[in-house]
Image 1: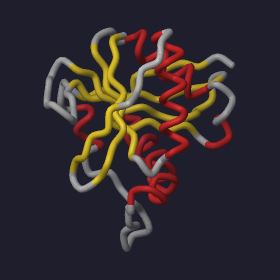
Image 2: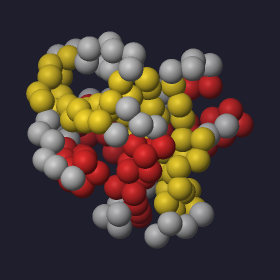
Image 3: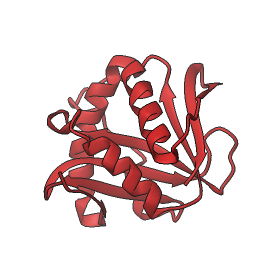
Image 4: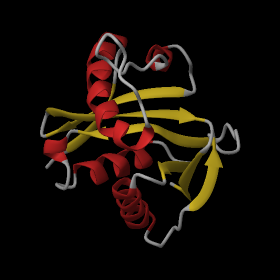
Length: 163
């Protein structure tokens, strides 16, 4: 499977917004996200990805077909360090999961943007923690253990590494 990371254009904001609804639906199991009266979860910060230089939106394509998205920020959500890349949101459609698409996408992003990285995973999302553990370890070629961090009343597992 050929996986490509493609910068999302402002014209594709609605595509990302639609994909975000699927992501939020999946994520609501762990996060307590509530759907609005309009039947949508929404993502009020999405428009900022084309306005703020420290944010970058990407679509993920597998064999040319839309397979997900990744939203990046250049700022640690833990320390505030502006030299750390952070995966703010990462989503792979269910039909592309467990096929290597997510790992290929993450590795492509890390190869594209070298530097220090952090990947945060909510403690309740055990499947994601296992995915990111495998993904980071395979990318770095060594075992990177997550550090537990409490923020906003939630417990996070944070993987930190150099790409």
